[in-house]
Amino acid sequence: MEINMKQIITKGLKYSIKTIGTNLNNVALKLIKPKAYSKPLGIALLLASLWCNSEKSYAQNTKLYVFLSFGQSNMEGNAPFEPQDTTVNNRFSVLQAVDCPELGRTKGNWYTAKPPLCRCKTGLTPMDYFGRTLLDSLPEDVRIGIINVAVGGCKIELFDKDTYQTYTATAPEWMKSALNEYGGNPYGRLVELAKVAQQSGVIKGILMHQGESNTGDQEWPKKVKVVYENLIRDLNLNPASTPLLAGEVVHADQGGKCASMNKIIASLPETIPNAHIISSAGCTDAADNLHFNAQGYRMLGERYAKTMLSLLK
Image (tube, rainbow, N blue to C red; front, side):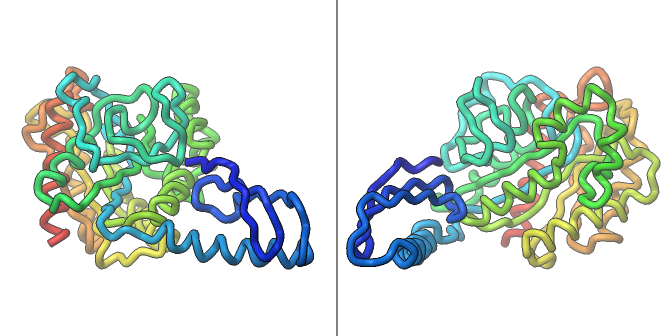
């Protein structure tokens, strides 16, 4: 959020000041009328004052529970949302991951979590009903904030910060527009926004729905572990208190085209001790047998939430 230009007098020096967000690197100062102190000393004193005020104004709120989410199209949200999905409790917010001028949203700002929660034209996602279900069971002074960074059709390799450039270099043209919205680096955008969220809340968990594009890849659990451990390190999180929730793909009895991947997904806790698998059994799917439909996303989101609630206790 942009803070309007103000005038401040510090130790005899009068300045105009403009801050953007909560980052002191974005403080702009203009000397209006020098008086008793030298300009360098005055600026130093002013910045010290701003630092103290910033620490007080943006103290971490332990009642804002933040959840990161990433993956491919089923996390992105493939089903059109319906009228019932557009009424949202204002205690449930999304930290916008991309600029969406047509929605009146700007990257890096919090908004009530009305769909779409991923990008400007994506659909309903498990995160929609994950947040709502959490609020139904948490105290009224708790707020939920989510960050959703997902790219349809991507492999898990896209979220490996050390090798993603090799992957994006050969990405199909239809995927590149989504990649460009994240500055070509979805993992980097997720971490960037997570650090913003940490200024005002506490990261409580990580959710993923990915695997269709890695169907049959026995190394997938190890690749997920790399992404998870990078997030833990880059955000200074405690793995013991930061669970990873991974959702299953469409089941075989529903004709799921990637259903064989569920066996590999089920093995993830053997590689990541704090990983938990979210069953998609019975979650209704779309005609393509790859994506869930709106009701399926609602069901899946509720299941993510119920598992998370059991871990928050």
